[in-house]
Length: 72
Image 1 (cartoon, helix red, strand yellow):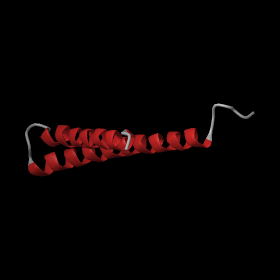
Image 2 (image 1 turned 30 degrees about the horizontal axis):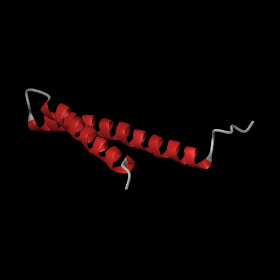
Image 3 (image 1 turned 120 degrees about the horizontal axis):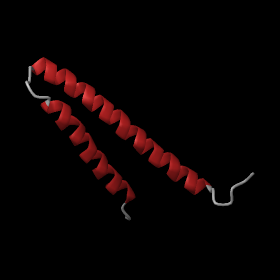
């Protein structure tokens, strides 16, 4: 029943990275939605903000992952 490889530290790391994944997915969904609405509101002919806002979210999340996983 007990998995010898599973420890509380491994479980906490799993939960930490699962949380980061959910932040990324929710952030991307909100950025795409906001980009669509802003493009519509500003009457852009090309979907500029639909591309730019998710890109900013991805860059911010990569920075956060690097900051969280770097050794101090």
